[in-house]
Image 1 (cartoon, rainbow, N blue to C red):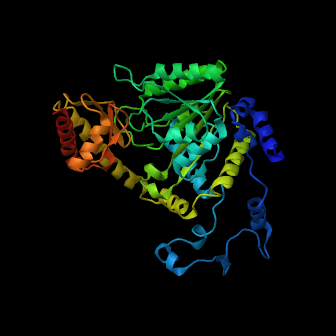
Image 2 (cartoon, rainbow, N blue to C red):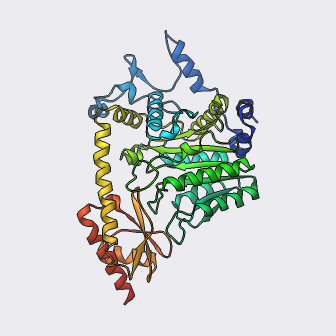
Image 3 (cartoon, rainbow, N blue to C red):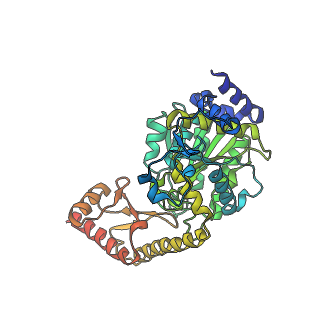
Length: 435
């Protein structure tokens, strides 16, 4: 093992040996090399005469660039666009995102959390978690309604075992007991377990109520206190899009600083929150496991993430980080976000209104939803894939088949006045296949 990796492991163990045991073999071996980036950082501070370190070209005391590229971007300083960003991200953006996170999640007030690390959007954050914590055979717990990419990230890439539970009870509530029982079962089998808490959920569009969220958090903390090592990952891709009765913040705040055996990790980003899907700006944030700063552990985890980023993509794009930072600091940021939120909420409520009319009940019903971009239909008489293909071929309507019975609808891209026509077509498609 590299001495730098050993040093980071010792830092983690000093604050909490349980977290060291949570790391995968790869996670234990990760470190941030004291190579070109470290030497360049030192030179940036001290090389006042000449700085011949990092591999960019400079001109006139700034980065070299082509006018034809800079022309549409010239409201920004070249230094905020063209040079490499640090492996952990633009420092000003990391600080601003943390301030935003604490403001939007009241339960984080006074909690010890690390500085968010910039990722190449949320999928990259999931990949980092998988590399850090998942060895072959480790269990990854998720509701049975989950984003299919989890399989690639945790199972295909890292050999983890996806373990699911029924997302909803027969009464249409989130299945808290099923979640806790599955974590207990998997945790007792392996000693540690990774749980993915994706809320608002993709594909169902469900966000737990306050009572459900507290029950989830309390149940996980109890299991951790009983000795199961839990890596609780909140996939908050659709954070803030809460339309009806639900908790209005991430469960991350309810899990942070709660147990030495519970490491809470928050994944979020500007991708969906700020409607900048192509910018690929996400964040990974670690929480301390107890009511102590645990600065050594958080620093060591950050350096391991930095080493992983350095060894895969080197760093995340600088321009998009600059654009997001500018947006966060813009005086109209909150106002513009509120306007878009109202549009999204109106679409979600219209979907519910149309489906509650009862005119489709012989062909499909819907799973509970109250947030996010999506909702799911439960088909009664036809298979989802057959219906998906038929809708596409005959009506030019695109949907997603999740499994045999479930069809995902992204109301995020359907105007309010188009909602009823969409479900009329889906209903007619079911009738076509029933002939």
